[in-house]
Amino acid sequence: MAMAPSPLMAAKSSVSTLLGDGQPGYSDQHVDNPYGLLIGPDRALYFCDLDNQRIRRFDVKTRTTRTIAGNGEKAYAGDGGPATAGSLNMPHEIQFDARGNLYIAERDNHVIREVDAKTGVISTLAGTGVAGFSGDGGPASRAQLRQPHSIAIDSRGRLLICDIGNHRIRQVDLATGTIDAFAGTGERHATPDGAPLKGTPLNGPRTITFDGDGNLYLALREGNAIYRIDRKAATLHHVAGTGEQGYSGDGGPAKRATLGGPKGLAFARGRLFVADTENHVVRAIDAKSGVITTVLGTGQRGDGPEPDPLRCRLSRPHGLFADGNILYVGDSEAHRIRVLR
Image 1 (cartoon, helix red, strand yellow):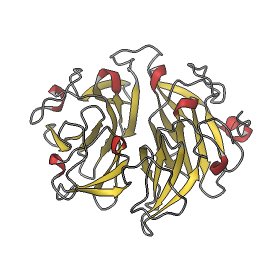
Image 2 (cartoon, helix red, strand yellow):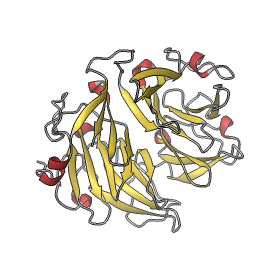
Image 3 (spheres, helix red, strand yellow):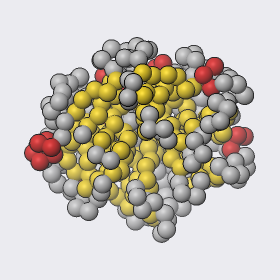
Image 4 (cartoon, helix red, strand yellow):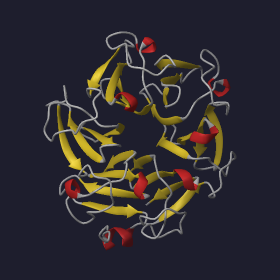
C-alpha cells in the first residue's frame, strides 16, 4: 500500500481541467484519449488526440482548437501533401525542433513523421511502415522500427526514438537523416545500475525526457523502472522502481518504490515527474534526495473530483509536460487534459 503523499505538496497544489469534459469527442471542448503533449514555439498547447488520429493545437487564450495533422482516418497515407489531409495511426508523442518542424511518433504505422514548419507538408522521417528491425547506419527512411512510442531531440540535433518493440533506443541525425543505435540490445533482461550504455539490455523503453543538464531520463514500461542516462559517461543509473509492478514507497527512496507501467516523464525544477499509468497517478522524484511522492491521483481509476490533486482520480494518464510551475497531464481515458499548479 502506498504511503501518504506529502501534505506540503497537497497544500500548495491544485488541479483543473484545461480541455475535455470526461466524454470522448472531437470539438473545441472534447478530446478522445489524449497522449503526448507539449507547449509549442508559439506558446500554444499541442497534443496527440490518439483515438481521433490527429495532432491538435489548443489556443490557451481563445480556448479553441485546430488540427495540425491527421484527417481522422486510421491509416498510413498522405506523404508529400498537407499534414491535415494525411492519415495517422495511433500518434503517441510529438516534438518540435529548433526550426519549428513537428515530429510525430506513430506507434501502429511504425514510423516517425515530420510536418514542415513552413509548408505544412507531411513526410516520413524514419521507418518504412512495416514493423521490423533494420537499417542502422543508413537512411532513416529505409530503416524499420517496431512500435515507436516516444521521441526527444538533443542539443546536437539528434532525434532519439524509443523503439519499444525492439527494446532499443535509436537515434536519427536530423542534418543527415542517418539512423543509428543508441541504447539497448533487443533483449528483455534487467538493466544493471551503473552499466555502460553500449551492450546493456532495456526492457520496454517507453518514454524519454531531458533535464536541464542534458541527462536523459528513461522509463521502462515492462521493466517498471526509471533510469538516468549520463550522456558524458555513457552509463545507465537506476533512479526509481524495483522492477516489480505495484504502488508503494511514497515518502521514501524512489529506488525502493514500485511502479505500474510508467508511460510519461517530465523534468522541472529539480524534480522528475512520472505518469505512473497503471496506478492512475502522477508521482514526483526529487533529483537530490531521491524521495518519491504522489502529486496527483489517488491510486484508484476514475475522473476527479477537482481541485484537490490528492483526491482527484485519474484514468491511465500518459503524457506529461512541465512548463515552469505548471504540469500538463494527458489524463487519457478520462478524456481530459488537466493542469497541476
